[in-house]
Length: 144
Image (tube, rainbow, N blue to C red; front, side, top):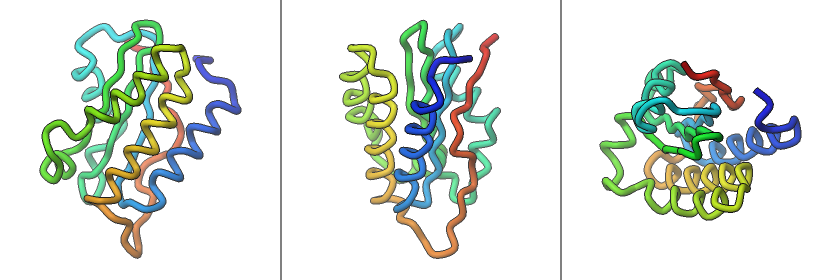
C-alpha cells in the first residue's frame, strides 16, 4: 500500500526513534485504507496482531490510522492504562487532528509521536539496559 513515499516513511520511522529515546515505552504506527468496524476495536485487533502486548513493562502504544475512512485512534497497553489518567490521549489526538483536517497525515502522525514520547517519558523513563522491543517500521495492513 503506497500511502506514503519512502521519504515520508523514513520521517515517521525517525519520529518513532526520537520519541522512544527518552522512554522505555514502545510506539508503533499502523496504517490501512479502510476500517470496517469500531476504530478502537480495529486498533486493539492490530495491537495484538503486532504483539504489542508482549513488551516487558506492558507499555506499548499504537497509533492507528484508516486513511480513506478518515478514522484514527491511539491505544496503550495495560501498564500505561494503569499509570495514566483516563483522558491521557485526548490532547494528543486533538493536536493530530489539527493536521489531519488539512490532509497533512505525515505531520499529524509525527506530531502524535512526539507528544506520545514526551508523555511516556514522564511515566516510563528510559532505563539503562532498555532495548527496542518492537519494530519502528510502519505496519501497513490490508484490512478485511
